[in-house]
Every structure is written in structure tokens, then in C-alpha cells.
Image (cartoon, helix red, strand yellow):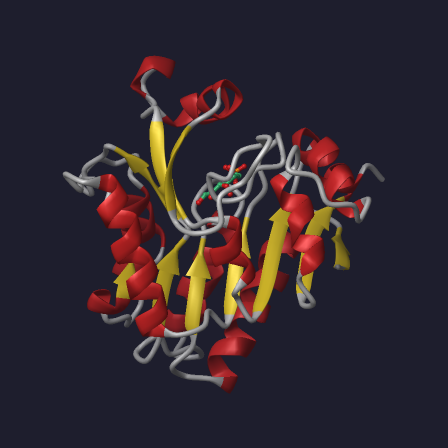
Length: 240
Ligand code: F6R
């Protein structure tokens, strides 16, 4: 894993945006694997600024998001579809029909996961997968467990993730209990992976990931199996 140490969140966001922009310039019909959460917000605002300045074209791009709460409506301002619309899609010249997020409203969530895997197969290999990391080492909603799932699947959120995400909801009891998420196998199929981490709260998870061993207790450690992973992090997340 290549580690790029940044002085602060701004530098991390700038470098991440530049890496995504480089992929898009080399391949105007790139497939971007996207994440939500507070970590990539700065990257998205820079991508929007580049698009507005006429420096970056989203017209040929396809996006696939990692995950979505379940059950949740796309109109709910805490849904990941809503997050993507407000942080990126509504502000750039992307074809929204080429933006995919797992269906948080599906009547049959298992079937929705299978349909999402089929969509992923149809759009082709993800050129760059953006990831954040949970304090417990989760990626997407692949939570630490004795065994991890390979394809897109329905999962129950752990107590620690519900607590960590409660800050975005009116109260902890409003956080959905489940999610649809790409599995570890889905994530590892990407051509390249860019994982970002900032702040001291991520330090333990980042350290375990960087030990280079594989443990299902830290799903992010499985990224060590992939040949092209870059970690962009600040000093606090690295413990320096
Ligand atoms: C979001 C996602 C999550 C987050 C992680 C970190 O789509 O899949 O794994 O990346 O929970 O969240 P933040 O960035 O809010 O600290």
C-alpha cells in the first residue's frame, strides 16, 4: 500500500481530487467508485470547482456508490443518494442516469443486492474506488466480523457504527439498522483504490491496516491483497 502523508484535511482533499481528475482525463468514460461520509466532502467540493471552472468533464463518467442505508428513501436528507446529489451530482455535468447507488427502498433487499452486482458487471471495472475508513476498520458497511461477505449484500450495522453515524441524524434511534453494501470481493475488483483517513479517531484502524496482515477484525486490512492501493492521510490518522 502506498502511503501519502498530508499536512491537513485540505491537502488530503486536494490530492484526492487531483488523483480522481487524472483518471477522468486519461479516460473520459471512467467508472468511479464513490463513498459518502465526512471524509470525501472536501474532495467532492474540489471536483465540483474543477467542473465549474471548465477543467473537468463529467459527461462521459459512470459512478457506482459503495453503499446505502436500508430502509431509507432517496429523498431522506441522510440517504447516501441524497448525499451524492447534494455534494456532487447536482453540481456537475454528469448524466444522472449513469449514477448508481444501491436501492435503499427495495421491497426485496437481497434481490436489490443481486441486481446491483449485475449493474456493476454491466458498467465494467471500476477505474478508481474511493474509500473512507470506519473507526472500527470497516470499509463500505463491511463491519468487523468472524467472516466477511464477498458480493454486495444486506448487513446489520454494528453498535459502534450506529453511534458514530448518529451525529448526522436527529437521534441515535433514527439511524437505520441495516445497509446494502458492496462486499469485500466487489471492492477488491476495482482497478485502483484510494482510501482516505483523517483525524485521531481513525488512528487505530489505520495502524491495523498498515500492519500488512489480513484480519476480518479490520476489514480494511484486506486491502493489502490489492496491488494498487493508495492511502491519503493526515498526521493524526497516522499517529505522527
Ligand atoms: C460511506 C462508507 C463508510 C465511511 C466510513 C467513514 O459510503 O462506506 O465506510 O467511509 O464510515 O466515514 P466518515 O468519512 O464519515 O468518517
